[in-house]
Amino acid sequence: MTKHYSAIIEREDTMYVALCPELDIASQGETMEIAKANLIEAVELFFETADLSEIEGREHGEAWLTSLEVTVG
Image (cartoon, rainbow, N blue to C red; front, side, top):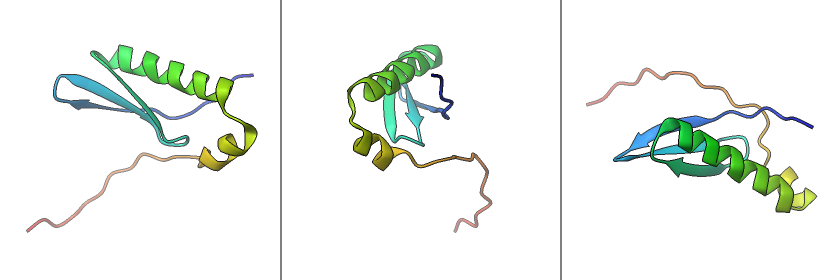
């Protein structure tokens, strides 16, 4: 079975950090591609090892990416 999740990838210093917000799982890598591949591996390992109650407790449903306009100062 294949499931679809979101990935947010940000640069932090010399590394890239990848986050799957629906499952609250993160990984990192030296490039965006490596960070994404590492995140996929982390999510797949989570599903291989977690019991059903942990999976249900972590799944947050859909995630949306939007922008914010804020007043600063």
